[in-house]
Image (tube, rainbow, N blue to C red):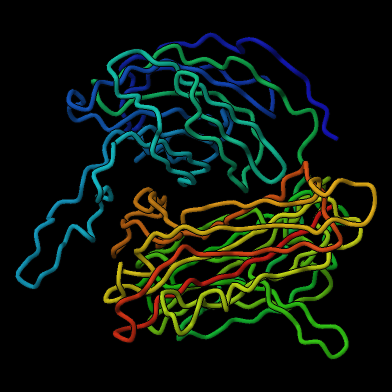
Amino acid sequence: MIHKSQIVQCVTISVLMALVSVCSAGPLKGRTGPTEGVVESVWVSMRIKVPTSESLGDAKGFGLVLIDPDRGQLEEGFVWDEPNTDHSIAIGFDVHNPQPTDLEPDEKGRVMGWFDSSGNWYDRPQREISVHANGRERINALSDVEFRTGEWMDVMVQLRYILGGAHVMVLIDGQTVIDEEIWDVRPMKLHAMAGVEGDSIDVKDVAISSVTLLDEPLSEPVRVEVFDAEFLANAKRLKSDVDFSTVPEEVGRVIATLTLGEPEVGYDHWDKKGTIGISIPGEDEEAGERFEVFRFITPFRRGWTWHMDVTDLLPLFADQREFDAHIGTYMKGWLVSFTLDFYPGEPERLPIQVVNLWNGNADIGDPDKPVVDFYKARELAVPAGATHARVRATVTGHGMFPNSKNAGEFMPIWRTLMIGSEPNEGDVLEQDFITMSARDHLWKTDVYLNPCRPQGGTWKFDRSGWAPGSKVEPWIVDVQAEFMLGETITIEYELDEYLNEGRGETWAPHHWTDAVVVFYK
């Protein structure tokens, strides 16, 4: 357990630094003094005034940087609306993301706006908020709050370090617009700076309003290396035998890190399906099983690094296991690096068993191959001592025209997950056992905000659960805590109706599926 000292109220009085430029950035508008030590959590506040969209002129945005005063500096090329710099966590507020140019087809029928660096193909509001860590953008989201009002508004940012990373919360006039974790960052001593890109934007009253200092260092991870810059091309499958004997007895979090680097032959040109999996040997004469650990789609002609919390899969990481990596490319390729960081500590919930549900490609829209034959209801024995469960369904849609409705890459569809448990014999009321369902729209509308941008292809269109140059996050459904697990649990997965009227004209549309249920105690 980490004991923390609590310091309340302002650490320092903000000092306005109007019209002071830092390197090539716009003017620095405010800064604070440094905290007295390494921070466990901090609240930073400021006031902003951003003109309405019609009055912005050439303004690009503004930013808030929380930076280590001993190691960090704003280097040449830094800008406030995309605040990438080392030894820092920063928030960018972007008001400049226009529609692509060249939207009219040329003589060959090509629409060149598909490929340029402007991503806002659907002309969505230009009020984006991004989170940056140590020189790289991690999160980018369209703000639900309109902050281009011409009036003064309050901005509050909380940075709270947790095992393996940090939790970042951004509020505008009391409404939450970012509430997410970022991984592979470490606590630091910090001070805050804010600045603008554009004379029409103003910032004032930058202050650290409260801070909690870290009494003891957070645990450093034990790293297990799976692949180290291994060349993957020609649709081959990399293999690696991994020994988990160095993993701590008690693990509080597991963070996976995937990097796609550039080989000597250059980056592959296309967005390709990619997966990293682990194989668990069977017992006696039973066949072994593969579990997907990390799904991704490669970028068009560039590399990137992604992090993912895979603590739910902890029961799989034991003894000696075989990993595989596959990318469906027949052109150039990638250098694949993959690691697992095991952070010693007490987990929020202890996973005890992971069970495969459905794995493979489910063809959709074909009456001769009903999707229910793939997503068959699963009835599973509940392991002894289990008190909680969650389903992790990683599903992406693939295939396109002339399949009707451009299925499955460019077709949104609703899906339903149903979970039930039969009552045990005894005094517990039947209604206390699980009976629940959840609905989800398999459709991703923030593709154009992907931090891995721009790319050399059609990277900006909405898609069925994925984006080029992105990891694929699972749809997670928790069993409601107020219900009880019986001796068995039944899990069903249904798609809304869809009929492919273009059957046989091209590759069948399909949903690439890897779904598991995780039991905890």
